[in-house]
Length: 459
Ligand code: SAH
Ligand code: SF4
Image 1 (spheres, rainbow, N blue to C red):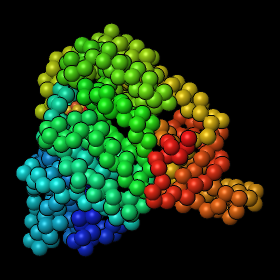
Image 2: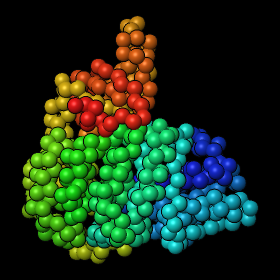
Image 3: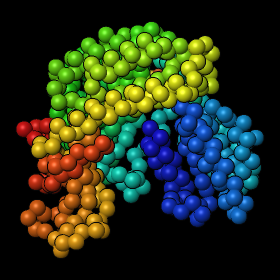
Image 4: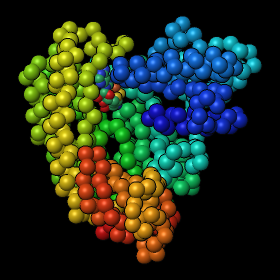
């Protein structure tokens, strides 16, 4: 989500004449896009801001801005806490950013804009040359959240849930495809409730419209909420040939008592039922999740329920977090807080179990041929001793199940032809690591407009 927002900021500033630089010391304007979902992210942001003090001392004309969730949450308190910050802009102040920067340049005064009033749809497609990965792009389909999970700060810093009109979304994706995108990830805090409030077509219908776009090969989305995960979406995995075989379905806990305290509005039974249905419909689907350990009042029994759910589902991957108090979130006021040592211990137990599943699932892919979309060369091989290897370039891409695959492509060899970002590559998997796979390319297919979804391609 933050990558997309940062791209939007960069694009708006490019229109105002700013250029991006990879060197911090060269910059006239430094913007920090922040996240406050967990306490650790917030600490990191403030420590980075602290380090900018010396740069500002050397270069007093430097403009330092803080955007995103911490800006929204803390507002002018940031100006008090960090004297070298010039601008604080909230999560809905993006389209005002160039004007705010211009004002600071002209008047050299500090500005805070955390107004939530902006509600017009001002997202625009960022050109390929302004982004890190032009092949795989993000598109926000909704902002904010109305769910109020008791541990979560998002509804307070991102505002009410608002869905973008499908026509705007389709237009943005079409432009991104014209810029070379082959894969789109649709973003929202709870994509399953897309359009419900506004009376727009459902998320599954939106997926159907996106499937019909020529030149687009893959559709991903994140995040889904189990409580709104309907049969129409499960069915989409059967009927939509561009929909990737991966679902990120955060469960947060395996204990019904804790799920209730979290205000998640589903039970472990409902969650397990959704997983069973998904696997019934699409047996090769990869399922990943988020889990919080040490939520206030989490007993050893609750934690065992979480471990039990993990054993029942066997996730392909898991983001696990130690619970932290967040401003305004209801659980901050709950009793029964768990000590850091206890949280840490539970996190390690959970991660160890997950590691065994990730490893086993990756290992099971050895010997199979996986189709990936080449995202780009990651590095030129430096230590290759044989002559053939000296032209080999390491490429990277992802399977439909969202597993990273690395491989060498020899750009001087003629047997497999040239490789460009965005091409489909069929890779025979040879090795499995904890977070990636390694293989040998066996077929390269240049992509062209108008091809069908890759699931029909692979058939
Ligand atoms: N909208 C998504 C989650 C967004 S926040 C959803 O509903 O699943 C991303 C993840 O951060 C959450 O899934 C949760 O696991 C974690 N998280 C959020 N608040 C947290 C907190 N206070 N402490 C620890 N982890 C938290
Ligand atoms: Fe936070 Fe819950 Fe909304 Fe996700 S659904 S953003 S966890 S309040």
